[in-house]
Length: 293
Length: 298
Image (tube, rainbow over all chains, first blue to last red; front, side):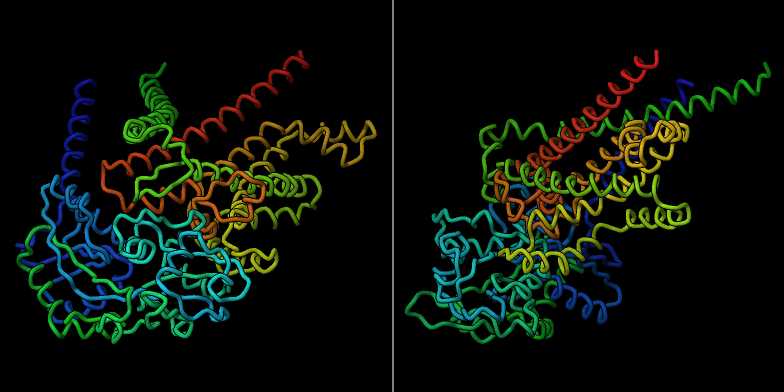
């Protein structure tokens, strides 16, 4: 009886030990390649479109694409569970350190660009704001639309969750106006919604709301209430588009990245090279992101 | 005694025992796991910072107070809805409704309990929150109230189903005795049947509360998730962020072993302790009432 228990215990331990090893990403040198790609929700449609086209052309490669947020993708890369992490923000130094501690050297590729559109409900007459005004709205300084030339309505601030790269980028570029020493934070009553859909839905039905999201995610019925943004009160107010991102006149545009664990090799290298090719960059423009030149 | 029968007996006893003990073992294991992952938070973050009013983990603001108050206000709101509706429905089903109606209604109520909370969350986003915003003239409908209404709805079927079973188990002779003494139907229900079924009804409420405080998906979708300190009575009309929604929204992002990771487990530990406290309170009340009944009978 006792020895039977011992055998059971040992085999259980053995199983657990094996389980720990199975989380490793598939080695890129394997013959039939399986690439796991995870991260930014902003990029998930783009990554899916790329993966579909690539798999149609390369039947020996299979790709799995999932979202979850830039932070989620980077965490998965750091923990060694994906091959490529998509991120709509650059990796933070702490994340790089954590990766190094796990024996992973992340390598960065800029794969596309994206404009962040600030949107309001079509009933809201406000159509242009300066970066400073948007910052003051989100930090809680302005609480009524009349303070920025709108109706007498309370402002309801909508944001993505903190694991979203869009959230971090918006904090750094808009709330803090690109100043790293600026300690401005989102007002605590900012609604943190778990998805782009949540933001679009609330902006669509709530005339008090202001939200932001990647330009590719703004549905046609809200394209007319996209805010034109100016760098300062004197500057031109610019509507986000591929043209205004490319000539750098729209101030809230960012690079989109893919990270690999170490210098890519084999199938992963081929895939990244293909993404940077004109063929894949054409897909970028189709989805209303901005191709890299 | 027959030897093979003896053998079988031993095995069956062992299996039943294992089942019984495994529940306790699992709870203890989960508790120690939470403790192991969550306790480092107390070392890495100062207690005064943990009890601060700002939750913004990506900038190292780890104040869990807004999350705690958010969970409490939503749960209390939900229970204010679920207790009267749950007990009322259970009383109606068990004591008042004719048999045929009860046979249709009870399965329907239980079916309601099986609705996935994500589906209810969709209803909340698309129907309930726009309605609340217009009807109550709020800045946004994504509020603690929307969460409380949805959670109340989620807790009612659980409460009804178990409370009805408890009421049903009260011997018919109790009701007949009360009616024979000249009590009205209402007096019989309120003074005899309900008190007799008290422990079962209380269990039903506890399970309802458990379902409420642990519910994640529906809450995350409709409460707006703004980490505001909800201490005023009017906070029910403002967005809140609950502990469960915080864990669900942020667990996927954190790197294993980071401070944020430990704090999220610490929140899990707090949730665990809250439900433990609720359960202990409930069972002690049930236990006490039983003792008094025994005293009266002896």
